[in-house]
Length: 202
Image (cartoon, rainbow, N blue to C red):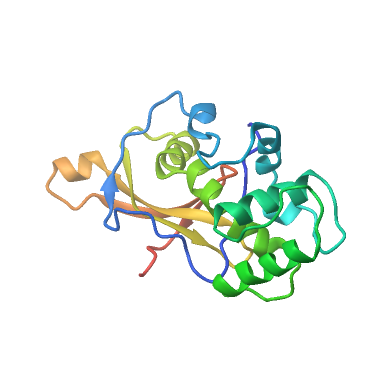
């Protein structure tokens, strides 16, 4: 399977409307088409860095240089924290990283580590790992034509920092017989792992 982009979300899950469980039909030709590039203002030459999970991004701090620094600067500007986009992690970039960390309730140390990468790339997470894609992964893994999957549209994070959707599985035949149809819940991760679970309480 093609490598999927993994992210984590510190402290709270990313809420994506709608908030109620809704049935979603996923197309059979999903895998590559669902994992799309972000619509953000990241230059094309920096977009390959977006394929790297936050936990595998380099730790950046003052005096760091390179394309990853340039991406951080682009994202800082995107969120309104103006800094020069020159690929050099100077004092101004450090100050704006700290301002960004303060706004997002992160440790304010001016260092771009895993949690700060996660917050900076949160939009890319939403763009690339969608409910439709999670449903298509569940359909492929469980391979049961009687099951219908639905989601409340909310992206969660587990204790290991991995993001997932909590899907409800319903039986078509049970629904046709007048039952609720609910047969179980599954956590579906962006790397394709599907785990039997419990419903997520809000």
